Length: 273
Image 1 (spheres, rainbow, N blue to C red):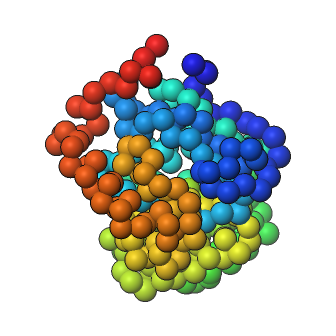
Image 2: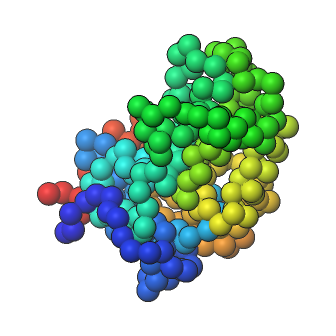
């Protein structure tokens, strides 16, 4: 068994998602098992996200989708296997958790929230000058929030706050962007505007991985899909991954899960020490 963890690697190369084990993708998952208190939420997942790809991660509730993103950002240590990041540092990764996990009670305004996106590159003890403020204001314009700079984030609607978080990721200028349910409980207009931002990132050859639930949205906007049901069901071009037989299999696997979630799942024998 290899030592679990997140590991830096070499310069990324072109690869097909999941099926091509010969090339080095931007993110490589090798026999990856993830979970909590040694009860697995993701079992033995192997494959890769190629540089510049746009991938949806879908599956039933409790399938391990959010858990997978947490492992890629380094917030969760694998039970077994490895996440390998090729040519990436922490400053190259932007991660948007589910909105319910983001604290909004802190007394901070919209512009200062967006400026936080600069901190990984400039450090918390360096002042943020006019050029960086200009970039933050430009990002707010991109997401449709010009004129909101001094509004407290606590006064924003859910859709407005999600626009702020996307603006913060725009100023991060990251190569790898991880989005966990970015359009849940967001109005249709905001969703459309933020999907435009996702398309912009894809056009700039950034790698975007998003956990999503709306399969029609996935079919319309995401070329690649990983269908996960704690184990990989399919990973490749979206039309193939979301074939009816694959969706039926994922649903059938979910029906066999314990009602109370991952903490009741049996331990994974291959993840034992």
